[in-house]
Amino acid sequence: MRFQVLGNFEVLAGDQVRTPSAPKLRKTLALLILRHNQVVSTKELIDELWGIRPPSKAVRAVHTYIYELRRALEEPELGPTPCRLLTRPNGYLVQLPDNAVDLNAFRALVKDGSEALSAGNPARAGRMLARSLSLWRGSALANVDCGELLEPHAAELEESRMRALELRIEADFQLGRHQQLTAELKALAAAMPLHEGVYAKLILALYRSNRRGEALKVFQDLRRHLIKELGLEPGPELQRLQQAVLAADSTLDPPSTPEVRTSAPARWVAVGPPAQLPRDSVDFIGREAVVGELAGTLRRGGASDTAMPLVSLIGMPGVGKTATAVHLAHTVRREYPDGQLFLSLRGTRAVPLSAMDGTEQILRGIGVPSEELPTTLAGRIAMFRTWSSGRRVLLVLDDADSMAQVDPLLPGGTGCAVLITGRTRLYGLPGARSVRLGPLAVRDGVDLLARHVGRERIAAEPDAAQGLVRFVEGLPLAVNFLGERLAALPDAKVSAVLEGIESAKGVCGLSELAAVGLDLYGRFEASFSRLDEETRTMALRLALMPRRRFDVAQAARTLGVDSAVVELLLMRLSDASLLEAAGPDGASPDQRTYWFPELVREYATERGSDRALASLPRVGSGCEDRYREESRR
Image (cartoon, rainbow, N blue to C red):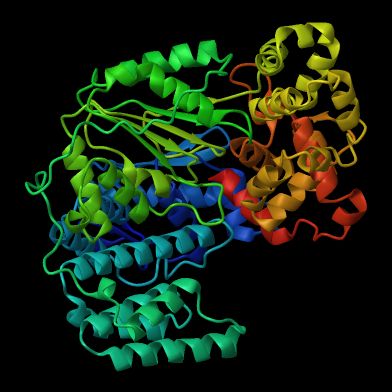
């Protein structure tokens, strides 16, 4: 028995079509199949079938539909079948092997094709991706009247199809097939008149086919359409492409041959192993437990035949992620005699470092001259992974923004190790050890102050020194800054400095710090600006609650949304290192207590008062629905 979702939803038993003809039966089975081997609750089925106005006997109707489906799927004439529809507490589960659903074959082929493209093998990538696209027979779930659960599934499937098509087109570009692509890209542009990525590929294909005039006309046609429909100019990437076409920029020329490398090029030789680590700080203090534990993890590099150690340090702005990573890297550098590489990914900047520029910096760091740099990202990835295979290299990636930034930069050797820092938790790093850095203990913060101003001065005003550390919540960046300011003012009283900044607390404390040179406001602004508008609005409302600590139920009442939405919001804020949480080990979100670090609350106070926030848009139903759907996933 096979199930098809990439087009009309179909149930096939041998050469027989056994698709339910009744719309609600078909919809019920489609949801169960898309969530196969997972429990789908009765409530979810009711929401999908009837939306917000279910009939009074909805549960009984669901039981009837399940009975009908079970009878159809397990008819004796079909013989033994691995497909089973099982009842579970509060829901149902379809149990079947992954190869019974065409979607799983599609995803496996796309994964293989993507990996082949990253490894510099566009020929294999093109074959795998073409096979994946051949599984589609029309729009996803075309014969199903999708409700609030199936609609996002169908949209996600169409996005996956588009992504596979983009990867296949990229493989064809790398193989020099730009002339063959022009007709396909013109058809895609006509079908998606606002998709700037498709137009960029079409312009490039035309330019590489010696049709520069047509390429420029495509840009002008798109520009007129965008201005007429949306009142917008084309994005910066398209505008840069137009300028490059006008200037006949050589960077647009096609590669002479596909970038496929199976061994290190013979024309360059690295001069000694790279040693790019910044100097370790003489003032580094505390973190003994974290450094000791993670050093042990990194020293085990090469212990596995198939995996290298990955360590991720996350934390709020100013908590000392980079300093800890540098200190940790120096601690284990002797374990990696083939080199230590350091790369700032600029994840909190307006324009983070691209994978193309990141791979270039890494390859230059290992001695590749400019004329030997591959011209494609896939070629650069393949060159670095080939070079690092069989070597023991430590790579430090500082200030990471996303997995899309990090993944192309990872080395290929299992004897290597990677240390990543960032404000946001990165999901999708298999086997990675993620550690959240907290502030310094007051004792360590006072010790750090003493290293700047002398122990005698601190001993004369111990309470004031502790007050300074507590005011900046033990953030090493702020403690170091205050220590440097005090050292520059040898006659100033520690208590006078504390009194000056405390007088502004809750009103303009961060501005007071910024006035003397410590711009924490800008750092928090960078973190909040990465949230979408409604998430940011909800976060600011929570930060301005009179209650310092709160639970899920209290946050839900404040925001006027249900607890499922709030749980996802709190998880996002915690992942972004803007919110702290505590609770028993293994506690669910509704059993935990949450609070904003005091400096984050200071930022929220300066960002907008309750009156100002009242003018911001309320949490829209669209946002709430989106959060609820994500929480279900």
